[in-house]
Image 1 (cartoon, rainbow, N blue to C red):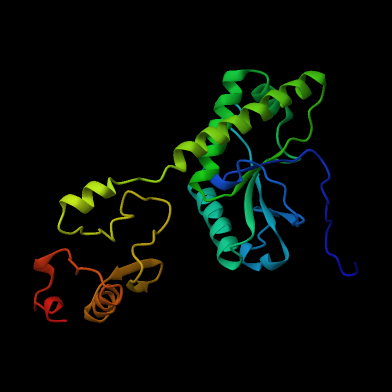
Image 2: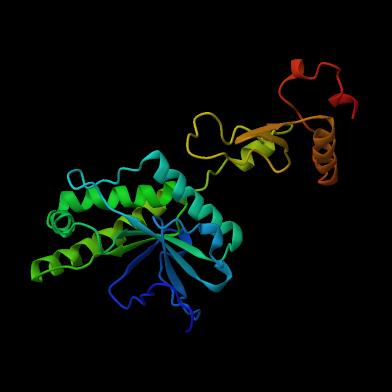
Length: 265
């Protein structure tokens, strides 16, 4: 343990970790040991410097709710930090789970006591926590309430945990729903289907650049991402269509192909 800088705390306290992924709702036991650590978002230590291969779970520390609304007010800078954490961890180690940790030693005890003391306040807190976790790509939620002060707090904590788990399970029912088209009717009544492989994201997504399609040609200018198709990228896409034995292709829009190059490929 030589050359350790600072202090490392091994938490063996009541940490609530609620899984946000749809398949984990049954809380099946796992033979894989949890190897977790907290990443203090305020220290300047970049998430990219974490050796994610050594961990099963990494916690973003910390978020705290507004002491009046009990919702989480996420500033633009915090939003970028949240996105950077989850995307960096998942990019380096897709098996590592990210959890957003709520509270911490510096959090106001009265805020948590107040939140847990009334059902409507608990609902506001729970709904906002799930929204934040889902929006910024976290796999779960962690509660670091340091600490419930009395028997009333402990009783209310019990209510909070029951309601939190129920809300996560209910939310998963809606976000897990896969759009199901009437395949039998489509197969019987249409000659073919044009699959739209763009417009998954656009100007309405204000927090992050979205993946556009399986094959893209791109460039950049400073911090601006530029994506477009040219003859080379379109040739690759058409070859992919042919390799799959699909009926054909379509593109948007005919007036953008000034030299009629696409139909000549």
